[in-house]
Length: 231
Length: 240
View 1 (cartoon, rainbow over the protein chains, first blue to last red):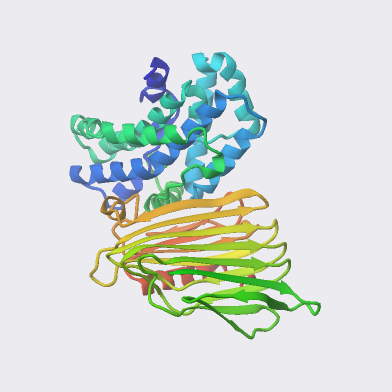
View 2: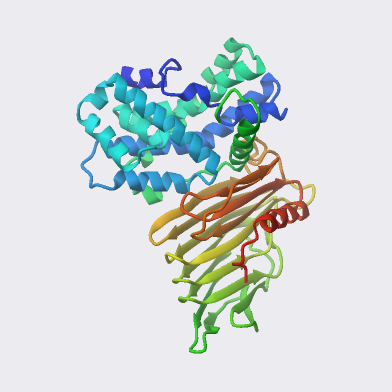
């Protein structure tokens, strides 16, 4: 894994990820997720659905960034990811985070973005001013494998650290859970890499009805009452 | 059993929608009924199943301006063994289609692959409902792999794949949250919809127009009642 990918996956990277719980806050607020034992099944299922989707689009985006391509690829990837995200709240969360991530990457002059990818990031933002998080992550990561791993890892690490803050779980125990998922995260990233060069219309479209419903309700409550996380 | 069914409807010179082609093979039986100006066709399964080895395909072509209502008369019970079904719609300009199959029950030994592919012209409309029931009462579900792909004017509108029958997903909050029934009602129209939600249901606008209502419930009656309640709150005039 490249140091660049590590930087993007670091929870201290100011890409806006810290304000998203990936549906965990809504589940916790409703008492659906209370104890330590509730966390691993949530993270595993999230990884295999939303995590796979993010990894696939991050990998496809990294592939597109590294290949000669016609104009319009960013529009196409954006529309294909929209079509795989039926929840408007989930699309909003992805775009808020994508915008914050693009800003951080642009300001910091990340090495991959400083060279050819600097123009790539500009092309992405020109086509989609509020890009999806997975797509802009793919552009910044510098490699297909790095993009897939970072996206799959963030799909788990974000909700895991939210669980520490919301449920008061032991951070060491929660990190142990994430460490125990390393093989699963690698498997999801590996699957995403295998799809990277395929036509965008053919990319996997794993659905997550429960996450979609949690996202919609979270957004409604977020507007009506104080919530710690945007999603 | 391999079965193919084809249905094509079009507008005649009086402006009425008429059935042009109707070919079917058991167990896929299409029964046209009279309707005022629009076409009403019932989808009748003339044999049990699908069961192992069944490969069913239904293709529906709807001409410009035509109005079709295709309604299932009973639940589809997915029985033991590997089986497939594919439903394809091609919907022309200004056409309005409602596709309302009965609930699908995924029984314990089922291994079914289902697909719904719809190609819509720019201003075509398709409203469809899917009610998936995980097992008969007291029975764990078999496996169902279902894919939906809808495009409008060549642009993607909805692409989703759902796997049922993996307890790690079925029981998880991100998956089906331990509920026995997933019901969705999709309105693939160019209209903008308003978001609404409650515990275990939502109506979410799609990025490309239209909306999807999603309900998770413990039984099919509750799920369909909830779908109807949500639809009522939004009722447009586009239903046939």
